[in-house]
Each structure stands twice: as C-alpha cells, then as structure tokens.
Image 1: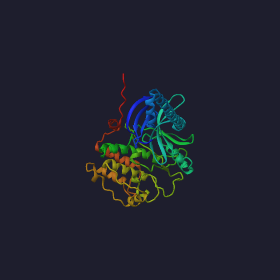
Image 2: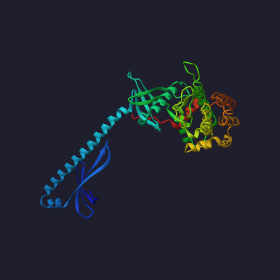
Image 3: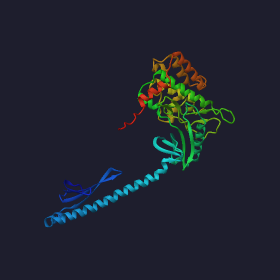
Image 4: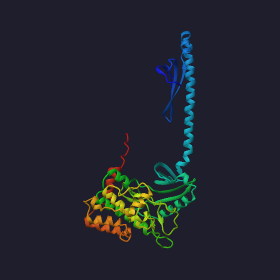
Length: 410
C-alpha cells in the first residue's frame, strides 16, 4: 500500500483501526490496520486501504450503507489477520515441539546455554532420575556437524574417558559421557561461580599476593594429581597432560573451591594420539616454547602455562597475545619475559623466583613436576605467614558475584 498522509481516526472495530487519509496524488483513501502479535509480542502491523471516492458518495446517498460496508470490510480484514496470527502461533508450537527433543539428552534436561565453541556447546542442565532425584550439572554437547566425523568422535570419546578417570577436589568431575539420541555429550560437575578470566576482567588489576598464592597452590595440587595418575589395571603412570591451562579453564565457586576444568584436549602418553599433525592444541597466549616449536608434549607444558597464569594474575595483564599460529610459533621461543617483580614491585623476591622458574624456556631449568612448584609455594606461604584460605576466597566470591535472592511478596 502506498504511504498515506494526514490520517484521521474514524473508529476501531474488533481491533481493526479505521482511518481516512490521502495518498501521494491526493486521492482520498480509507485504511484498515491491525497489529500482528507473536507470543504476545507485537511483531508488525498489516494495513489495507481502499479509495474513498465511492465510499464518500455512499455516505451522501445512504449513511447506513457506508457503515455496513465499513463493518463488513473491517470484519473481513480482521478475519484475514486472525488467520495470519493463528498460523504464526501454530508454526511456533511446531518449532517448540521439534526442539523439545533437543533440549533433553536422556536424563539430562538442558535448561540454559552457557557457552559455545567451535566444537561443542556447554549447557546448564538438570539430571533427572525416575525416583525424583534432581541435580544441577553442566553438559557439553558436540555440535551436530561434527557428529558424523568419525575421527573427531573417536578423539572426543577417548578424551572424555580419560577425564573421567580423574577424581580430585581440584579437578572438575566427569559424571557421564557417551551418545544418546544421536547426541554425543559429556556431563560434568557444575561449578557455581566464575572462571579466573571473568574474575580478572571484573577486577581489572592484579590479585592480592595471598589470594594469588592460594589459587596457584590449589591448581598445582590438581595438576600434580592428574600428571601422576596411574592406570588402575597396570599401575603404570598415564602421564596425563592437560594442554590448555588458562584463566578460562580455572573455575572458582562461590564456596571458595578451585578447580581445573575442561580436560577436553588432555592427552595420555600411554595412548595413541588422534590429533592431526601440525595442529596446535591449546590457547596461543598460553603455549610453551616446546609446543610452539612442535616438540614432544610433556607435563612441563602445563607448568609453563600455569606460570603464565600466575604472571597474569599478579601483573593484571596477559603476558602476550597472538592472532595466529605463525605469529606465536615465531615469537614464543625467542621472547624475553620481564621479571614479574618489575611489573609488580611489591611482591616478595621469593615469589618472583617461583614465577620465573615456571617460565624457564629450558625444560631442565623449569620445575620438573607440579609437586615441586606446590612445595616451593607452600614453603613461601608459611615463610610469609599467609593465612588466606577457602573461607576468604568464598567471602570474596560472594561479595562480588553472588546474585541476590529474588524478593518475595507476603
């Protein structure tokens, strides 16, 4: 319909707004309009117009005829628009019904998407048992376009099986994994809190020394456990390497728990690698020199990455950023890392030495195990008289990140 100017409201019948006006060539018209809603929300408006000349003539000859005509026209318009809206609602119901199966994977009811990456989606979910038991979990669901990629699924299942072996208070627990209704998934413990990257983004500055030391003590404890995990049958070390230690994968609960998350690209040296040759695993900003140079992966790359995290949470900023693999490969092996004490002069010399030993390019000079790092940190903590513990961390988390309870009306 052409644009109408100078509209004057005439009446409203069954939700249809009747008005008079003129189009560009000054021809008088009568317009009939109705809002179109979808799920109670206005999504647009449908307009129909007729030339008013004959209608005006009808008014002069028979006023009643005009109104009968208008009412009939309005009713027809309203009926048409009602059918349009009903069709939209029907389609919405059909879509919701089709999605119903996708919001549930076996006993897991997916309630909210938390995050999405290139390979999987992460959901908050309720585990529902037939006896009424309910528990909140996190479910990682493989994206549909990868479900038919046999190599990827083999890797996904192998690494899920590996992560499920880890049972430690500083490691996110895997509860279940497999395939249900054509969906590959991992169900894991839900950590109600924030990851370290979110906390750093919130603070926009370095953490207090006592808090930083406490966090790295817990993470090094979880790393040592995973690195030293043995095969239950043979008793031989699995030599699990996380390969993606970063602030995003360090989770802190409102209760002051500290956990390593996402062992999704972890590797056991006792198993054959399914990783494509030449593909770098892990975030570019937390790669070790040996990863950048394509050398053998050992648990010391996790120690280097944890050193980068330690440096970042003390200094308040990431040590380096890269946009592509080539830039990282060329820069990391040759890059000189400034002493952390030059970025944060208030930290003790002993803490500076620990951080920089984590970041030694030479694996001979670097900490050989996460246990060595943990032991040195514990000695420093005791020497400095640091008493910071999980209760202090819980107070910090709740003060800054706990959502208020919804108000109730009596």
